[in-house]
Image (tube, rainbow, N blue to C red):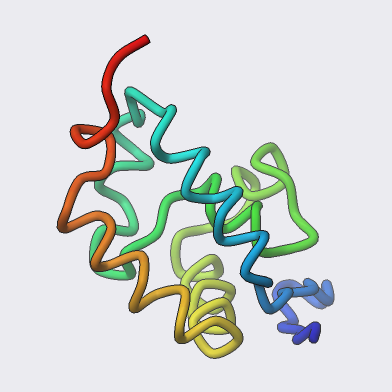
Length: 105
């Protein structure tokens, strides 16, 4: 299912993630070993990073960089509305820090 939110008169598609999408996200964060300071702290209260916003929407990271934080919070709110189960799962995964549970190659 696809939801939409309008920011700056632009309609942004927000997709509901499938179980397969969530598995792909999990692999993405498990292999990630760093987040830049902006990603790590700017949307800390919203519990998202820009690559995750791009993962759920019709925007890419370069496009996200053109929006203000206040504008992106509207997009994040729509992502949360579309994916409540994902955000519960995400909180549990981040709390467990899955990167430490995988042996190094």
